[in-house]
Length: 491
Ligand code: UDP
Image 1: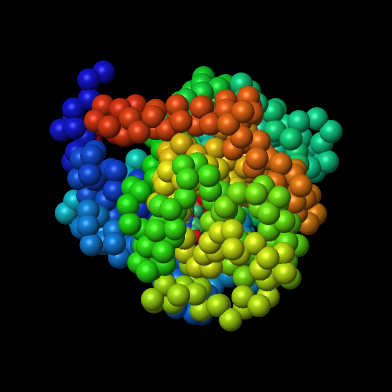
Image 2: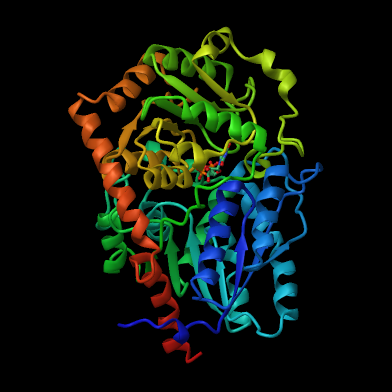
């Protein structure tokens, strides 16, 4: 079908984004792409948030302000929601999105000229989707993670009926028609305890997911061909799937302190091509003393230089700061927690002459794009994987929680652009020798497997560059989705 923009460009789309930089960043890109490619005329982006008693994280504010300045779409902040502090991350997200429903209802009901006719949200926002029916809107889910992850969620209502006992106690891998089987150890948080509130929040979300007009997945065919074909075969569930990735930011000056940013880039400019390791375990993760110690020893064993983005260690490692990531940076970008640098282990201090440490928000995309970066030691957040692919950088995966375990598996086994480390389940620690050895393998110009991974990621980088060009596959997928609803709904 020939797609003409004029056939689709009269829509107003309302986007509803959960809190957390890992959601906000791709939702901003989705909004930007919809408007700047004239697929949609008007976009309003609603952002839900947690009531965390302190002011909004500076990084989030900076990133949102720079989007607002471009004037492409409106952003509406929904009132912050109180959540129990002891709840796990998924449950907090579910509560925030559920309690935001009356506010989004109120906002949409007062919108005119033109009234929104499309609602796009994320899985955790899917309980909001009945609102779309009320207002006669088309409803979509935007999935800022892998297609394999979509397949699991679409298949969950079926699994719920056929699997007996806990998912994690299954001796066999979890099977989804047409997809790679999933090790029970790699399942994400809702599957860990079927009696937990999170599982009971998650199951109805999966049911809602089955009723949407389409799912936009931040992936592309060459990245997850087998899974995308399985999803499109209808054998898992008949719902239209649109791979529209990679939606990532442009690798230009990012929203972090200019002085810090310039210092990092100047330092990278002085290093040899593909000689430096970039390390980051995500926007909201606090590493334990033990993890930092092993990582530092591993970096030392590798003998390479590094840029390491991390927060001061905690006795309790975890993702508690995920929904408020970036709040450590003051308005000038300087971390408020500089004082706690003394909390780092000796092994960390010992390697300081080999690299740079970034204690607040790192300009990740600019770093990855730099020609001196040879490998990314990553927690395998899906945005980080897409960014690494788009910059042609292979990955050493240290997955921690949520979808990261499945992402790391896809990255290593299906996409073939890196190696997944053996992370101890209870402590989330990896031994330093394994870290050092794996980094060297991937960076070694003589290593056959390392060469193959580097070659593959560079091929994918070129494919990714074309995805959103005019008439590129992801642009066409997105446009097709709206052409289809205009035919179905006669809009
Ligand atoms: N990010 C960044 N600087 C940091 C930490 C994270 O720019 O210091 C960005 C990163 O580039 C990515 C997002 O934050 O776009 C993190 O998303 P991802 O899905 O990789 O992981 P999450 O933090 O959500 O676990």
